[in-house]
Image (cartoon, rainbow, N blue to C red; front, side):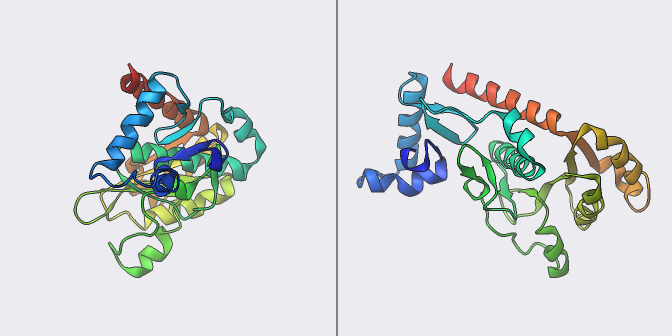
Amino acid sequence: MEDNSGTATWDIIYDNIDKYYPAAKETKEWQASIRGTLYREIKNNQNFKKIGFGIFALIEYEEEKTKSIIEKSPIRTHSFIEGVCLELGNFEEYDTYTPDPTAVFKDNIVLSNLRTISSLPPFTYQEILNTVKRIDVLWLNKAGFKFPKRAFEVVDSIGTLGEALSRTYQLIEFDLDFHIIGSKENKGKFQDKISKEPYNRVANRYKYQSYEEIIDYYNKRLELENMSLFK
């Protein structure tokens, strides 16, 4: 964590633990052992704290404030919401994908630290894959052959809504739902767009969420998780 400016995900910890503890991976259950040690330290308020579903920090680390992230720029808001969607997908035990690996979530964590797969499996025609691989975040089932189960598009401005809907519509023959995330002010324009062809045929599969709604949902789920984990 010190080498990562105070924070780390599980992948960062697992990938680098043997640099500091050469014997750390010698036992069969070494990952469980690391998790147990870290959680015990956190429960006792020693050395570390949990700041995300899979993100940890040194206890003295000062977390980035969500409000300041959102106020910085649309680009920063976009990548932050992508990170929220990846974190939630990981917590729900899906495999997660994003085409924006170098974008910053928060607290020195980039999206490649959160996604569980770096490329989409060939679950359909290449022409469709060429389009849907640009969807902001996809959740896929872990067991068996991987198929998308939920798609998220972050709409920074109403001008990007058409492309977001078009990308998700390519997956209409698959069993998944679609989430469009943007400002509260753009919800009416989304509803107008979704009421027209071809989207009106499947409007029940689309849901619009404001930035505030998904951030509030994320924070509440994280709070409940932390309460159950460390009670």
